[in-house]
Every structure is written in structure tokens, then in C-alpha cells.
Length: 91
Image 1 (cartoon, rainbow, N blue to C red):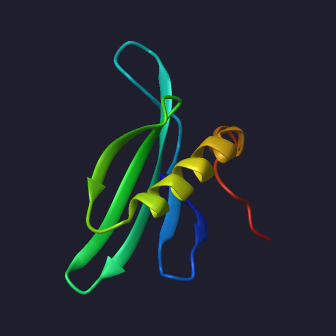
Image 2: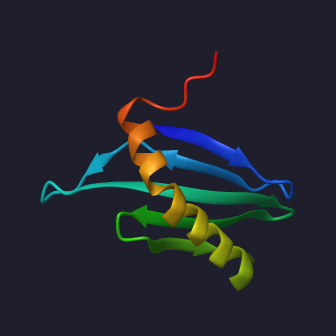
């Protein structure tokens, strides 16, 4: 399941996954940034805990990617804690 984190003014939607397990038992989750365009989407997907980019499509600038990486690095504890709790609970 994916959980919405935030929506930026340019339409970019940031979401993060539940905690997943690799075949070797290691836990990971993904954080995705996606912005609608005229012909589809600009997309960048990070895997935690490595912070590696596992998918990159479209026209995000290097500056935008740097900002997203910073969000992922700073937000990692939040993403893990919230994923363990089943997502963001809104009253």
C-alpha cells in the first residue's frame, strides 16, 4: 500500500510504501515523487534505506532531484515509523 506524504505546488505528489521485505529478509520501503505532465508523468523513486534512485522518468531537474533526496534522507525515520503504524491517520 502507498501512503500520501505531501503534494507540492507544481502538482508533484510524494508517497511512500508500507515496509516490504526482500528475498533475503532485509526490510525496505520506497518513496515516490510524481508530477503530471501533458504526456504522462515525471517520476523519481527512491529505495530506503539505501537512498538509491530505482526509477527516473521524465523531466525533473537535478536541483529538484537534490531536494527530493534531501526530503527522503531527512524523512526516513518518519517514513519507517509511519509505515509500521499503517500510514498517516487523519481525524
